[in-house]
Image 1 (cartoon, rainbow, N blue to C red):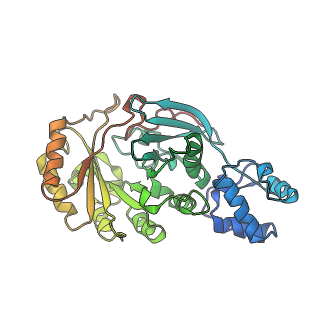
Image 2: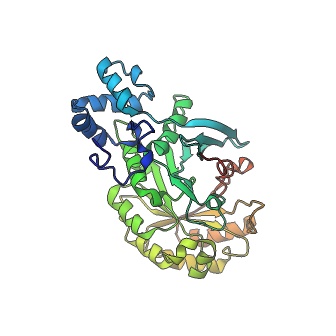
Image 3: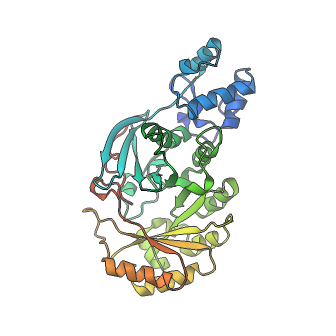
Length: 365
C-alpha cells in the first residue's frame, strides 16, 4: 500500500523514513486501522492494540507490545517505525517555566514551553520549524519557514513531556502558540488534534486545546469544519495600517476579513474567541487604540488577552509601562468585555511570547 492509497498524498514526505518505513505515530486511529487491514492483511482490532501501546503506554519499540504476536511485531518492525524526538536541551526559568529544545530526525530542531501553575499545566506546542508569517516583532519569523512538522513531531512534544512528569502533575492545557503558524500546517495539525482528542490516545478535552493564528482567513473556516477546539487570533493592532506595519500577512488577508471570519466562526456553548493583542509602547497602547479595538469586536463572543511586549535587543519595539497596560485593560472591563493581561513567563530563558527560535535557529540537517 502506497502513501496515496492511504489518502496521505497531502502529508509531508517525512511520513516515511529512508528505508521506506511508515511513521505510525503520524496516523489517526482510522488510518492505522485501514493500513492494518489493507496494507498488512491484519484484523482491525490489532491496529487498536498497537495504537493504545503507542499513545496510552508510550511504547517506542514494537518488541515491547506483549499482546501482539511475534510475527506481527517482526512485520511491523520491517514495514513501519515509531518516531521520537531527541531531547537536546531543557532550560528552566526562575518562575518554573521550562523550555525544551527537540532534535528532529533530519537534524532540525524546535522548541516547546511548559508553563506550570497551581491549577493547571499548560504546554505551548510548535507546529513548524520556523515560520513564514514574518511578524516584525517575533524572533521565530527571522528563521523563515524551514518545514512543517509532521503529526508525530507535534504530538510527541506533548507525549514525551507528559511521560517525564509525575503521575499527579500531567499536562492539562495545550496552546498551539509555539514556533510556526498552526493553520499554515492545517493538514498535519488536524491529524495531531485527532490523536490528542482520541479517547484511545491522549484523551484531551477540546475545551483544553487552543489553536492560535495570525489570520489565515480560509483556514479559519476549515478549522471550524474539522474540530471544535478553541480559537485564538493574534490581532495586535486597532487599524489596518498598524497591522500591516507589524504583520505582513495583512497584505494578503486584511484585518477586516479576519474580524469577519471571527464573526462567522461557530462557537460551542460557553466558548469565546480569544483576541491576542501584543502591546508596544507608543504604537498600539493608547486609549484611542482600546476604543477602536472595542468597536471592532462588538457583537463577537470575544475575550481579549493583552500581552505586554517581551523586549529583545534585535528589535526596536519597547514594552509599555504597567499603568498604560492597566488603563487599556480597564477600558474593556468597564464595558463588560472580558480582558486579561498575560503574565510574562520564562523571559529569562527566551521562552516568552515571540522569543522562541533562538536555540532552534541555525540547527539543521
